[in-house]
Amino acid sequence: MMIRDTIQKQGEVLFRYRGYVPLLLIPAMFFVLQDSEWIEIRFGDLVDDVFDWFCFGISAAGVALRAAAVGYVPRRTSGRNTRKGQVADELNTTGMYSIVRHPLYVANTIIMIGFLLATGSFLFTALGLLACCLHYERVACAEEAFLMKRFGSEYLAWAEKTPAFLPQISLWIPPVRRFCWRTALKREYQTAFGVIVAFTLLDYIEDLLAKGSLEFELETTALFLFASLGFVLLRYLHKRTRLLHVAGR
Image 1 (tube, rainbow, N blue to C red):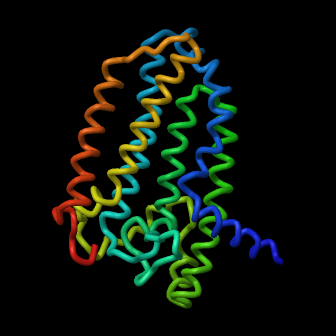
Image 2 (cartoon, rainbow, N blue to C red):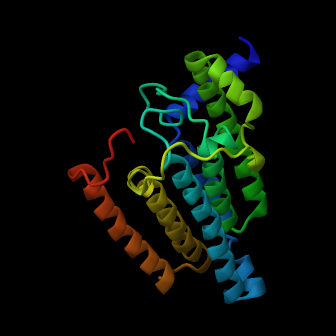
């Protein structure tokens, strides 16, 4: 089997279990977090807090990028795939997809960078980022093989001028549809909540491993509780009502 075919097969498997792949970092993360308080010890509480919120801001920017991508696209298009197989009735080529072929994977990588940095280990961040890049390289390869088969010359013409992972702003083409906040909320509320939960747990685990006790900081706990209420509300609206449903989106 050619290397390209091997990478594609790996990408198909990784996509099916993409929600579980980040869990592979957990064992190493627990080891790293034992020394995660070095910033606070060396530079003080204020610098440590600013650094933590800076890292959270990076991940939040990744969530915003995801929302900016999905808020303009119709349903059943490239990037909206399921475990049962790839789905694409239409090729997205405007908006975020006009400057980069895989905006969702770029956004996910940004989210991961923020989380990895928050561990306080730059070595762990570098290794985690490398693993993330290898993961999405393979997933993107599998997706592109499907899209090439599905759209042929239309996909090839778009792919030849649009970079895969490094956005080129000069290529920007305005979206053909208006931004739909209901679609963005419906598709991304779980991602946003997951990021907040991850950072909250990271903060608590850091204290537990480094200090031997939990410290419930007001701002962290308040953000988590607010996000939990928002998640429950949006989950209800998504599953029990049609408020977040928009025809064709």
